[in-house]
Length: 169
Image 1 (tube, rainbow, N blue to C red):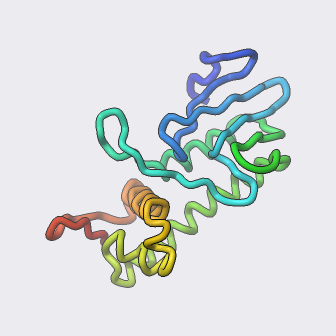
Image 2: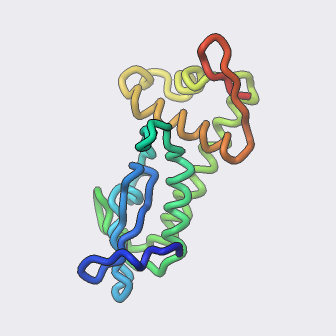
């Protein structure tokens, strides 16, 4: 783990777990193996990894960060996770692994949409979410753009600006 132990508060190690938000932190109690994870890990639904600008005004790679933060959780011994919503998570390692797999499954679904000819974030969002697209526009576009950033980060897709719109291939 990278320099997490140098930040402590009341016996808790504090470390960054960006993804849901770029400034999200967790509190880990090593003696109890408890992790207070905020919205990184929620038992009954995947956490949204919202795209936001960083301090320089550049868009964060929220889904890349989300996966890296989940992988950080696997590098520590955790028995209980206290989530920002819902129940205490009693089998966190399985849930963390499930969430990591879900990110890759979602990314592969988006990759297949691009391979089938869809090339814009809006087109992908409208096909995937149809009637929910307008009602939940921010959440949906945040997911779609975040996953496209994730695929680009992995080298699985490229993008090109055409008439002011990013096209992915």
